[in-house]
Image (cartoon, rainbow, N blue to C red; front, side):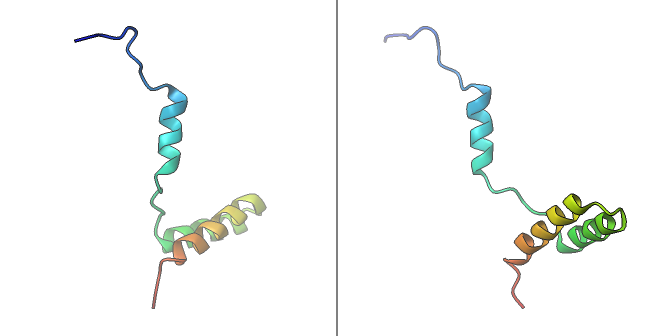
Length: 64
């Protein structure tokens, strides 16, 4: 049996890259729509844009 020194361990960057490969679950569409309404009321264009894109992404998997 041969041992290797030092034992290789994953770095923080490798751990973060592995997390990026996993699909993240999206919140429910009503929660995203509420966030979109809140962003519009606050005149937060960036927040409204992010919320709108997440609504579309969440709705892609919905069939009627």
